[in-house]
Image 1 (tube, rainbow, N blue to C red):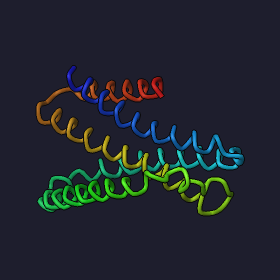
Image 2 (image 1 turned 90 degrees about the vertical axis):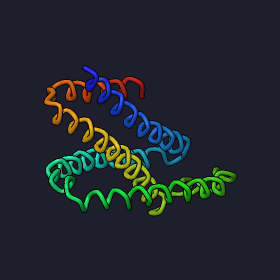
Image 3 (image 1 turned 90 degrees about the horizontal axis):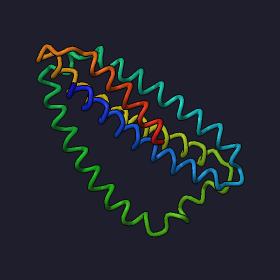
Length: 170
């Protein structure tokens, strides 16, 4: 039963983080005169990102033998160092970028290739980032269930419950 709650909480939290990013982007394009133009790219990139994330998770799940290798242990260390450096860089970037954020996102006021690609990439990266975090957490829950011989059904129910809860809250 605990695994169901853990799974539901992880899926809800990561889905909600992605939804918050999407809401901010939606509000930015909703205030734009070219809302109907950007709406197509918004929903298209959301759909593509979700499908891509499920495909990537399926591929990674099929490659679990790679995750058990000693190479993976070293790779995780380098990912940890890289993620830490990126977080520090992001704090400096946000400090410099946040002061005149409204001026810098004014690219939405003109219909251009750059504005469309920016929206698509922002949506794609935010959804894929949260999906990968969900996959990593779910992999840990799945492997602990496998090690303890527990049923996987509560994990599946927690996953579905977390998705439903994030859709209700979003």
